[in-house]
Image 1: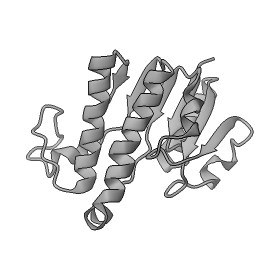
Image 2: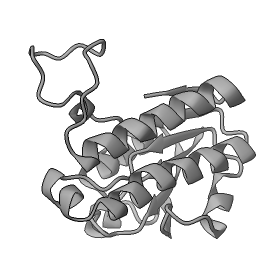
Image 3: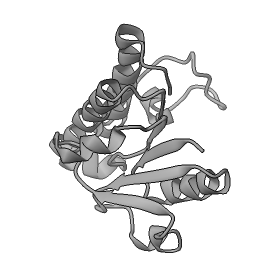
Length: 167
């Protein structure tokens, strides 16, 4: 059994990921602030997971949840274009500072693998479909930029701190 931690686990994608991880026999910790994720998404598995309500954009006791964790799936983020234009600070706090704090918790607790949920929005409106990962990065909105900055943080921690990560 591996110990997995899922940020944003109460969201649609996160809750389905947790279902799949549970089927494989993993022990699961969920971090979510429930601003967009829903408790109902976790209710059917409540006795099989440990759920921590927290704000990853602020360092705190939640970072101790990473102790003994083998792999982290970092899905937590604010999404949507228009709200990111209206409130870019919220997106920066959540998607950039939150990612930084998650990475530091991973580094401090020697997590064995980080999986970052990136966004194709960093490519802007693509010239070709499907968009290749080698396409030019052209974030057009604060949401896209913050997801790209988060990805850059992840890959930098991978390089500098030898934190095994994929994006």
